[in-house]
Image 1 (cartoon, rainbow, N blue to C red):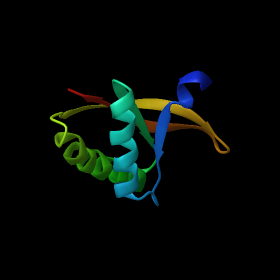
Image 2 (cartoon, one colour):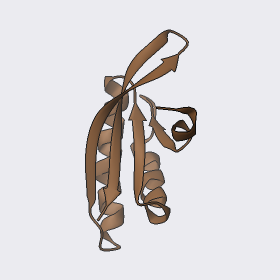
Image 3 (cartoon, helix red, strand yellow):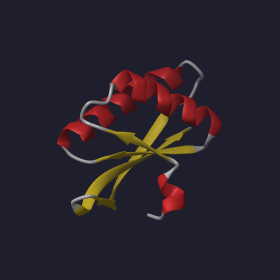
Length: 92
């Protein structure tokens, strides 16, 4: 993952509001064919999955459904390289 791609990714954290992240996902999907959400750690992954489920309800009002493909990425942190889960979400 390069720096150019990094700025186009929504980040989920353990303290993220799943409602707010869901809203960000839905709005991003209105402008882009796909959105990526990155989560590091079990709590962050939990918030991301809840947000994706909520976002599915948001886009359903416009007649769309979501597809989610999880994958792994390595990211730099102050502790060195760490693994993250990246959810690639598309509206169809």
